[in-house]
Image 1 (tube, one colour):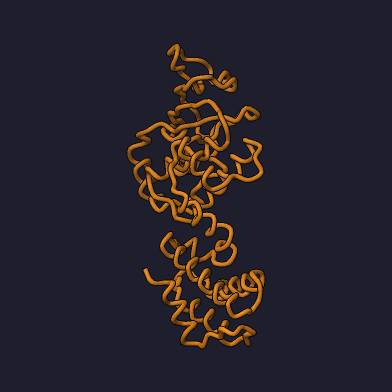
Image 2 (cartoon, helix red, strand yellow):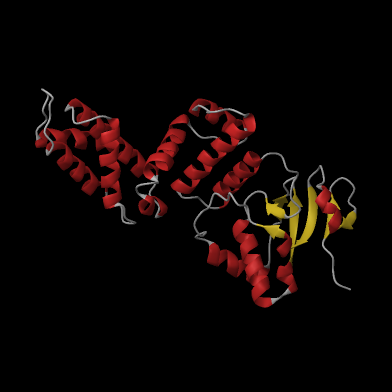
Length: 288
């Protein structure tokens, strides 16, 4: 007789047919599910392949899973979804089962957790990824901004301040400083559209902070020389960032290009910086 997926409820220790799991237990529940019944979390913070993928696959192929997957289920759906990390392990199990047909990879022990809010699931993934293996700065930043948007939707708030977001994240067990949230917002909203290759190749917080310092310093000189408004500077800065976007990011060519752009334009300001003064001002702002 073909095996059927089963669940064991934490409160009664009863084994029940898997068809009843669609009713979504109100308590955490141990389950044994077919890997085809589970899907990865669509908002998974890790947007690139896990650098530990091959090692994890070799371990699962040899020893199987050593920990259950955490799963949940949206109220409007019947398919289970990964609820806190584990997307890589699920995809590996599914790939191994498809490759081998081995029953070892067909079934997986899971811990079902009742659905609460979308933001809670996203933050659970963020916490788990931080514990298991570090996310790139841009992956974490995009997930935090995604969580902010979900919280605004769930709380019916037009715009969460960074201070309020910091407090809400801390209440949910994911502490970030106000300054880090600010850098993440800059990376996502300002830099991701213009230097995606650099960010996706591992550009970290220190480099983002230096780019932002250059942005602020150059913007200040731009205005001091009356070269245009913020919108005109933004266009120039974005164009130059795109020009130098590369997996092998180097800030110096961008700094030099901005210096040239500023000094080559006629200024209507009495405080007309010469090239050496502009270079010195920009370099000073980039010092640690």
